Length: 87
Image (tube, rainbow, N blue to C red; front, side):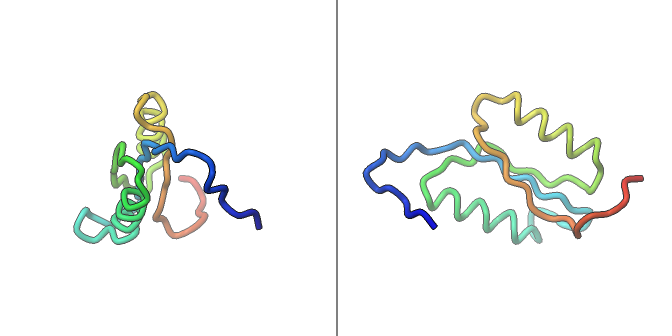
């Protein structure tokens, strides 16, 4: 595994965190909160955070909106219970 090259300059990214869940709220979203804590502790900017239900149209809408937002460099998703048949 390659090591980080500490001679390179750090560039903070604007990161959006998307939790996909039918049962989580801001109060119970532990994985989303942990991702936000870790990315900001590492010096990155939180560019957005949302919780959406496990609905393909709503997930796609959120991702598309963030992709079109210049402040968002990276999107991290968390949540879900694994693969399931689309309905």
